[in-house]
Length: 475
Image (cartoon, rainbow, N blue to C red):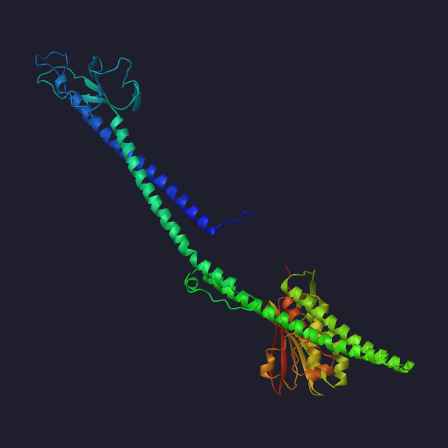
């Protein structure tokens, strides 16, 4: 796959935009200059047409023959190229024409408007036609209605076109110079703008499994567009470091937990093989080995359940879920823990406001409730009471609370109770068959369904576990 360069994209964007701007400036400048020069040429054509019309007069003898003062014809608009003009009157015909009037040119301002722009012998002309100009020089006592003059006047556009080309060339040269300066400035700006990103890349390249420290460069912190990226990188590295450390700790704890039953199992089998034994001794030894195997199998099942729960929480596994009643799952969990509660003479009180529905697997939620209930019952004094309640928080979430009146959890232990293989009282956990995975699995399952689990505790007064889950919203 072809690599893409942000630097090249930015530079090409600047170059193309500036080139387009330069072309637009040149076109706008040329069109505006042409428009202004054409307006000036039109004004000159009108002025010369009126001047030529003023040269027509009646003779002093009072006759109707019109006289045109050729010697007083104004100088041409373009000193290097002669103008064309024709003076005529209706009923009289052509009175005067310019000396260079071509035989092929025939115009009639009364029948049709002559071409405003036309080409004659390869030369471009612009024309003006005046149809109603009266004879200004008229003798006193002249009888009859004086004729109205029609004047056609045209001048070459050679000088105007040269001025337009010259203006276009000057504007184009200036635009190219500005384009070069802009590209140079853009290249410098892009290089300098991407420098903080390069510094961030260098800092990120130093991160490894032995060095998780990422120091955001100062210029990156001062760049508004890079601040979200630096914060995201710092957060990502912090989470990666936590995950890496948790995985490393998990491997160490798992190896330690697996080593104990394996060692015991190996010792039991070796003891059976050291000397001949009776069938009853073999039976007893094999029975102990099976008990150790059961403990090992249970540990592996818990580890597998934890791994799957975390995969669901991370979104790598998807399942089709249906709405379930929280109260029914709690009742099932209470029935499952009831033998343990009766053995410890502990009463479990269940209260619910209504049947809240959540989108989850009932087996998963029952496993969460069983873990929380077993902890509450085991760590409560005999004859105590454990309260379980379900309530709704607004219209979007439900809360399931487990309260006991046990010895409580010290503050230094409270923040670690959801960690894998963490046991606040290892000896007691061994006695009850615990591995320190129950709360970790509960937390992973709750988070897999978009919920949260928190704990509050006071030493000597008891512990409260609160689970919040999103309510099922019927579409």
